[in-house]
Image (cartoon, rainbow, N blue to C red; front, side):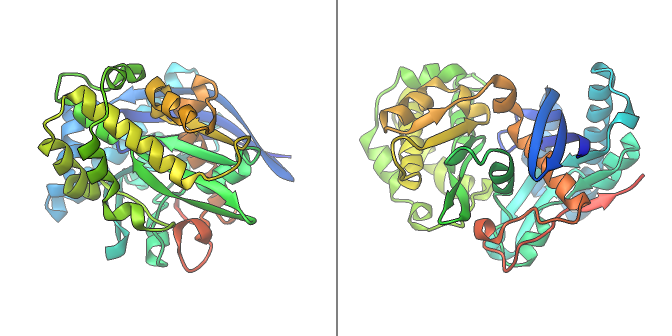
Length: 353
């Protein structure tokens, strides 16, 4: 049985920080995983500001930031290994998603920063990064990439839902993995909370104090995105162009907007996950801690499975670890049935120290 010790790195759209997970992956007819340790390193206000404003940079400055962020990821991996007393010779691979700045697949554009060459040089460990670009080049959405991991590691569930900055779902339908982005999740919630001095809605407590704004939810439900079929994906550009405006225009209280956006999120999930009442949906990502959202999903008769905290917080980083290992093995790690690309692909760039 071939075993791999991997450090997976994930930076999501909600800008909470960098998730780093150390896992052991092994293959014997099927894939097995064990999360050995993990930690989230929160961004400083300086880094948050740099990442939020990066899309406005000139080309030369963007290249510098790409390299700088790669060094930063490498430094955090070094710190993680030191804190956890892990020797570098124990690690076969670092697999990093990077941080998405642009995602406009209809314009053949996606860009994640965090140059893998600089992660490799800072850590002196083999690194795989840049998973999305080749999928967009072959006509795909470049997202979501996690579903192949859902299929290989969590195939005992009917579907898998990630509640990060963006909510995305994957499930098996007639022998094929189907997936896509469903709605904005923490990106909207955090944006609203920031207006009243909160970084996020802990346990969904603020949303739970609100009530439904019928006018706002009708406006949300009428947006074009919800009329599209999978494969489809969302980016910060969509948030800024379509969603932010609706909330900024609303005269409802922040609690009511949080209640309404959470209700809308759960309805859109239900509209996609149309299965039997005994079909289970595994829920991970930071939003799995939002008790208001989980309550609303249960009210819609979805059989929710919320796992232990370690899997909630590090599942995406774990799956990017798997994507890196699959690339190392020269195997498929992007499914065309998920992204809409012209073929299944083995994505990522390998950097050897």
